[in-house]
Length: 487
Ligand code: GLN
Image (cartoon, rainbow, N blue to C red; front, side, top):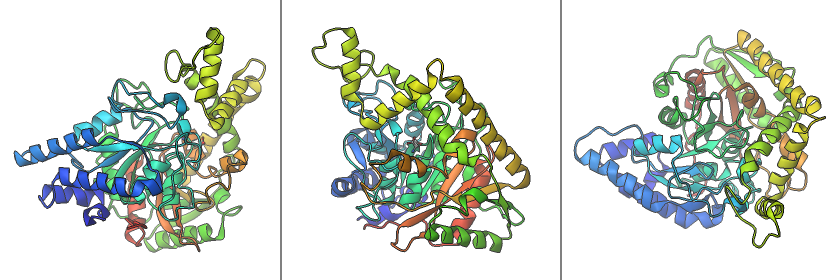
């Protein structure tokens, strides 16, 4: 493996600026590594080599002219395959969109290209981002670079595995209930879900629109901060995006955190947490104490309802969002139907995988008349209570910490028979989506099988800078960052 690929994104960017390597050489090296390793990993649905090389060339030309390069210019990135890149396939890892070519760029894509960040390919995911292990991809499974028999986490498993295996230093994922933080935790990297509305969702295939948010993956907190800076901001095309200035997240990383109040989420500390994960959280508590932070136990009393609430709201929203994939407006069209009804039914029956069908049926049920009040409306009310728990908590502490997931990466195939058990892996992450607050997962140690453990940090809405600062201070005390297990 070329040693430049083992560097962080910020280091790769410096190497370009110092003319130690060209953006084209770096991008070619990244593509070569993908070609050499991806048969084993399965991180990519497709490569976008031509666009990537074109973007890299633009960066090199700009530099040669003596012009200033934008942040992260020339540093290769993987885009989750549910975000549009004009002229390339956006499949959402679903058979129904297997041949769908994006007619326009997502806003994040536009921002990446403006910054001359080469997009090397479209990363594998659970079909329509529904899943926690990437086993729901209609095309292929993703293997965890730390142990190829284990899942990488989901739904952004390809984005996480690409970064963890050194194929790229950066990627984008989307997080509806934990889909960035969980795979970051399972793959030993940094993954962040920003505040709802901080990053535009325009051009992201919608799963549950009130929960979806795009965010960065990287091997260091600094890289994640830099990438977040690139993709954040108001967008006219997304009415839920926030019209507020974007901070320079990289500039506050080294702020002193002495006296900072850190809450440990009680419900994610005592019950059902694996001993290795608990050990890592306890180590994190000690680290923060040594940095002068104050630690306090905080109870989020409605956290136990969050999985139930999420699986009503997310499925209800998805049943509506996925109605457009009907073989007429978008997607696979069944051959030789007898009538229009059969065209709709067969196209959807042939195109969607089992988990997506399960979600659509659950969601349609929750929204149907007679059940709406009992399920959907109640879930909305509970969502408010979960949000209120955080409001109360953040009166007492500046940030909250917990394990990202109660366990580390599990064996491929070990949970596929039991959807409910799979859903429970999201217990640590879902509340942040319900409350719209930012959350990050950072590497915090290893279990007895040498699989990475993730620490989650949560902050109040729009406190991304604080979140990244607290994460970076932890990272500096340890040697968990920027590790590539398979060289
Ligand atoms: N694992 C959760 C689900 O299956 C979350 C997915 C996500 O965040 N996209 O719905």
